[in-house]
Image 1 (cartoon, helix red, strand yellow):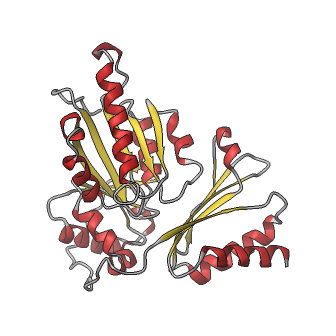
Image 2 (cartoon, rainbow, N blue to C red; image 1 turned 90 degrees about the vertical axis):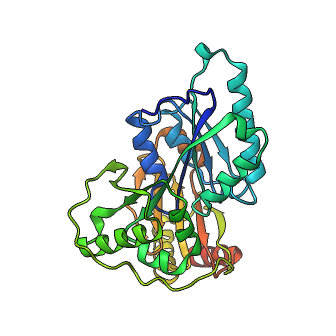
Length: 318
């Protein structure tokens, strides 16, 4: 458990990582184990996804959703205002009545943690009331090779980290894992590197010394990644929908870097997630998520949201 700051400022942990790296899963486990105490959680999503606040609320002092855009750019004002509100509430309370001295910001998978840190340091109020304790960045070992070769943001996130958590390390051979570790160390030689599987700490094996990936020069001026949210009709044929979704992920998985949805099933709300062409095992959610079901969010580039909607409508109703 992290001790509260001695100077009375709120302690902020910035949790970053590219789309699908497992931030919510890792944070859920940390909160369950008391790793951040009863921290207040800020959740920033590129699109208003329907479940993360439900998953984290029971283990935290409170949850604030920031869904007006990425906190490092278009949603920066919302983030600053939310932090100021927490600072104001904290300063108004007597020390013995304060529920928490810690905040965890789970960033969007499209956020640059360095830009968020700069926004806090440049604000005349926040700089006196918040201390950034740590920037933690999660890296998906399964998809790191493709992401780091093609996505400027994936590299920038790693470069900003104080601590790096490699996720899904059980799903890759040691030779691949060794190359991912070497590449991460090349991008950020000073960050501490750890590993996790489904949110739980995982001891890295003894890995051979290998060279990092040969990363080409890329810029951050490419086509932007955009979210598209689709409400699924209650009368949709789920077998047909599953075929459509599987075909879409197979055909456009390199463009659809993240898929996340909640669906109504007889067993309860079901969470479905995919990262590029890798579909993760479905997960049953708490009953509180039932009010937000039958929604799916696609995050990617190279397509139009209306095209996805027309394709779904044609396939399921045509």
